Length: 272
Image (cartoon, rainbow, N blue to C red):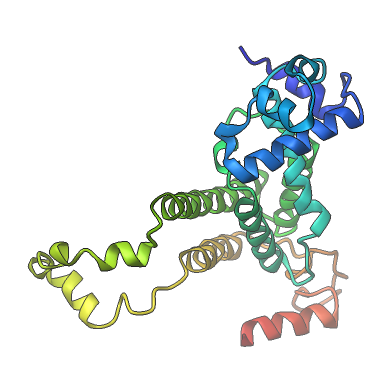
């Protein structure tokens, strides 16, 4: 049985990681998973890839469960190395974070299987979570809402990634694209006339140029978060764009922005 405490030791360096040897094991396992999927990863296959015996791997990592924990945190570190935090306020930053997360799943589709609720998080995963929390915390939402917002965006990305990975795997396995498969379902479409709304939407071009489900969904999620932020009482000591402290006006209406630059950025976003 897998031991979560052992994963914690390996991920956080409180036990022996074996230096470069463990790094080579993790990298070889990632390459194998990228090429053949997570099911192909075993201690024996990784050992063969490295040219060592299986028992030599067990001196560095106790089993596949712990190895997958290490693999997951290693590739999550790619996101931090690339950087995902443009200036422009919480929405632009969360948008960039969500796209970087999706790109990570696209590079490493096996992450869909490795992202279980009871995986021990490593330092790269926690650092990414910390970054997202800090972005949302600047909006002035309550702590529980900050956590919920980050979980919502992360969950949306994971759900979109699962759908994309399933579709891509099916296309590779069958050699038939989604468009080709549905295009060959003429016998099914002959029964659609009994559904008036579906038929009308089809006739009026609802399926001619489908919207990108990820981009459409992401914007709706962010719209909802923006509405939540607007409903909360704003922290009048913070800039509504970047969250930095603003000078408190002695009289009159509280200032919304910490600088002219943030005010102009807000104006451009509204115009856009």
